[in-house]
Length: 176
Image (cartoon, rainbow, N blue to C red; front, side, top):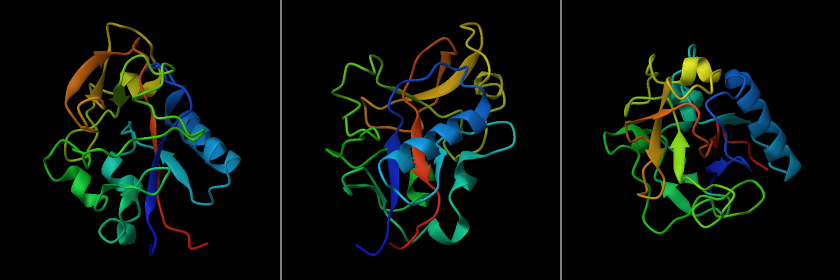
């Protein structure tokens, strides 16, 4: 395998209030470091100053496959997530948390939904990211997607009091 970018879930679900994007980015970093992954991991989220699409460095968007914790291919490359398919993953490939659990099979994530706050093209949806991921109010919404159905970018607004899966993406390839 000539390099790939990992997409891995945080070890616990998160409400819409996650202390903003920096707090979640830091959790991604810490949990990756804890299992010895060397790459930089960032939250798979759009926010006030960040479009989801732009998280992965430009020179890594076309060439590298996106893989799970077990190096199974989820997407042929980063760009293919945003090609209008609502982020449909390869069939029968699972997403695991940093501590190795299959998020669809594990009760730690009762709702098999992913927060993303993005359009299908990976740009921020201003009214749909839980006030920059700082509110847990059920009256405010964040954009989510059903992992159960195999999609990362469905446009499903959900109340920010929901507790959903957070994904972390490795944003550049580092050769071992």
